[in-house]
Amino acid sequence: MPPRKPTSIVSKNLDRPPVSRVRPSSRRWVRYGLPIGIVVCVGVVDYLANADIQFALFYLIAVALATWTVGRGFAVVISILSLGAWLIGDFASGGLHPNAFVASWNAAIVLGFYLVVVALLGRVRDMHHDLESRVRQRTVALTEEMVERQRLERELLETSERERRRIGRDLHDSLGQLLTGTALAGQVLQERLAARGLGEADDAARVVALVEESIELTRSLSRGLYPVALEGGGLDQGLRELAMATSAHPNVRCEYHCEDPIEIHNQATAAHLYRISQEAITNAIRHGRATRIDVRLESSGSGVRLVVDDDGSGLPPPGRRGPGMGLRIMAHRAAMMNGTLDVRSRPGGGSSVVCELPDR
Image 1: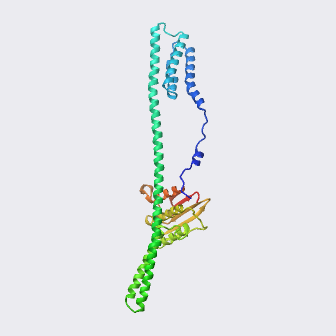
Image 2 (image 1 turned 135 degrees about the vertical axis):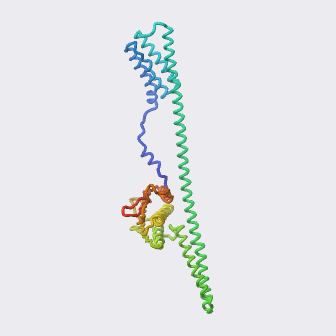
């Protein structure tokens, strides 16, 4: 199973709220019709009200709305319409000044005020749109950068795993076979020296013993670098050998439990689960001073759950908790498998690391 992205296209579409299907023509009618309707309503009120009450300021609602929703050109038209409605209302109610110059001056002042509002609000609108455009561009750039960073992190981990597997195979197949041949040649030499009754036979036996220790060390290193599917046992065999190797430490007992055989078909997923359990065991021994560690691999619906419990000192308090590079690496490995990682202190003491995958 190749590692999937944390969020798929399908889940994005399912999580997205229903889109309001409003026709562009309806939106345009609202944007153009609403300011005109406000002008008409204010003009009617201006006509019905007392001539001494000025309503020129209320036309700014329509002017501002036209500027913000449509643009400066339409706002200028609304300003002229507002001025006309204001003059007609005052003329019909008898409130227009009898002096033509004074009436023209007042109209010019009102129109100039409207146009100044249009210019200022239009500038603010342009700045707002420019800011929104920059935010969208920056969001797209950050999204692409995050995707690229996740891709690079995934490639680095995959490259690291490939190199581990290659070195593990080289140790097991090349160096291991060479040391085995050297041990056999040493045994033959020891037998020949012993047959002749020479004292160098004991020295040859010690050389053979050292070579055999080197063989065991090479096998241990190869299993640590390439544990999964190295000898055909898969993740189950790799975790079992990890528990046995951990129990070889003094004062540490590690047991592996798996009631039903669980097959992990993807080698990368199996390697990630192995590395998570390996890191959890290392943290339990190094930081928690644990003496008892239990590793469980169990089915969880269509997925799988890996649990590592220990009886150590547990997690440190949040105020004293360090950066936790190992925890971050485990969480990143879980995220690459589209899984979750939960690390918590156990009520009876110790800590528990739970990695759960939705599928295998």
